[in-house]
Each structure stands twice: as structure tokens, then as C-alpha cells.
Length: 146
Ligand SMILES: [Zn+2]
Image (cartoon, rainbow, N blue to C red; front, side, top):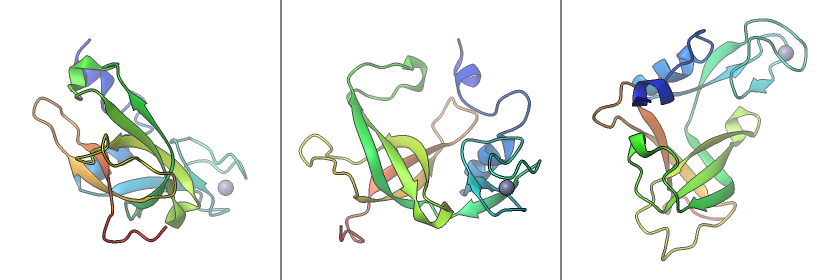
């Protein structure tokens, strides 16, 4: 299986605006134009009011760690993420507290424990050999206060 099959938009195009956003250096999430609910992951229909075709809005990639896990096994070897790595579930207050998954690229996660509630900032990486960028997270030490 190639990286292209593992990473990037699904064939039906549902999440294409998300991936195009990453290419533009933006985090884009869906929001219902009718009831204003934020939606993640991508859906064809709003789960609250059942309106079709939720809109896409750009969200500042800043949030807090809702949960995290350290992985010692390279589940996706094609992406060449060095092990161990930390996966974070980031809560986005500016998007109705929707939560998105990502990799924490903090340089010292082994010596500086990851804590729930820590403020994190997303950044966009485009690794060689991949067609689509990745959203990665780092702890925001300057904005820490929780
Ligand atoms: Zn709705």
C-alpha cells in the first residue's frame, strides 16, 4: 500500500476542502449554515438539523490537549513517523470545542510530560514523498497558562 492510498482525500471528495486547506496553510472544518453547528469529521449532512452540504470555514489552529496517547509501534510505516510518538486529541474552542486528532511534534515529549489542558498550536508539514501536507501540533509554551 502506498502513502497516496493512506493519506489524502477520500475518493468521493467529501473531505477535499480539508486537504486543500492544509495545502493553503489553513485548518478548515465544516459548519452548518442553518444551525451553525461545527462538524468534524466531514459529513454530507448536519447531524443536528439534517441540512445538507455543510459549509467549510477556516479555523485558527490553536487548541488544548483533550487527551493523548504515546505509541511505541509504527502503525503506518510509510509515513515514517519515528517511534515513540504522541497522538493528541486537540479541542478547538473557536470551533464549538470540536476535537481533531494529530501528532505532537514537541521536541522533548519524553522528558517533559504531556498534560491534558495544555495549549497547542497547529502547523502544516509537507514531507517529501507525500502529496498532501500534514497538520502537526506543538505545545505553545509562550501562551501557556493552564
Ligand atoms: Zn445544522
